[in-house]
Length: 315
Ligand SMILES: NC(=O)c1ccc[n+]([C@@H]2O[C@H](COP(=O)([O-])OP(=O)(O)OC[C@H]3O[C@@H](n4cnc5c(N)ncnc54)[C@H](OP(=O)(O)O)[C@@H]3O)[C@@H](O)[C@H]2O)c1
Image (cartoon, rainbow, N blue to C red; front, side, top):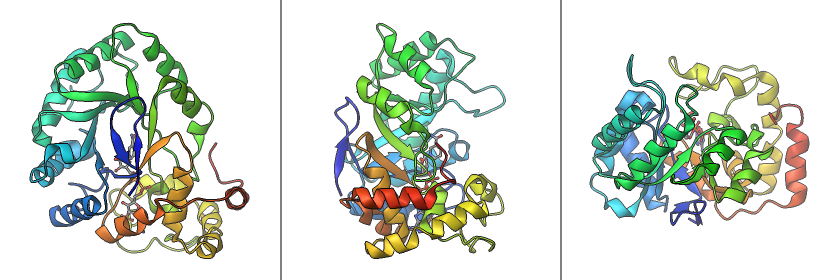
């Protein structure tokens, strides 16, 4: 494993990290989730991402149980708040942030997280209030650092300009070979501000592993085949996208990489990226995916990938 510094923080995070959206406490049972987490740690992954809303607390609760045997300083733990947790609990007001961090810490069985993130921008709360409340969480020792997910450049700048508040150290955007929007402005802006990128769905929810063939039903047991969550993958399971992705296979084979390793090496070539947060439904996926660490893609290969995916990439 290799490690990168997260923005201006003192956190060193593994280039591949483990997330828990749609998996822990939702579609992956306790034993399998435990096997994934233990394998991840064995392979040198030290960074775990979750959110209060994943399974409405279920992901955090399961992680809390599974992480409890480990020394707290052996891993970097990130969670988030913003999305509804009940009819009345939502958003990033001071009251909500104070309530949600305490609930997250209780479920995670710890007295601090390393990174507390605003899961989205809260348009119903003044930015000052959100930032002051996030700063108070840090001052109380309940989080070491703060970050955001999917904020616009305008909001990122506005937060940075505020006086007397804790500065963000991380940005969590969606980023993959198929989804490149943060390249336009967010990466360069964050670089100037000392904010690192921890990117989500680097495998486009599994589509970039090549396991979904165009004009075929998704393989049994895959995320796209799942009765409840399958629809979440729809943005990437269009037949044109799936056909283009299949054309990456010869590139991966030439480099003796799996398709997932090629996709993750592509994300990690971006120096703004501190970590690629993968999901996994079984430990073997993590084993395969960490094989991307240390792989360098040359300019010709990167250009070839661009040609193959031309027309299906979201910029
Ligand atoms: N901030 C946000 O708004 C936000 C949004 C989404 C996600 N996230 C974070 O990012 C994390 C990752 O998101 P994601 O799960 O969509 O990431 P992803 O890595 O793009 O997709 C993960 C899924 O792909 C499949 N997969 C992974 N490796 C594979 C392999 N080697 N071979 C075959 N299939 C493989 C597995 O699904 P199956 O085996 O079930 O097919 C796995 O659960 C989340 O857990 C969460 O922490 C954040």
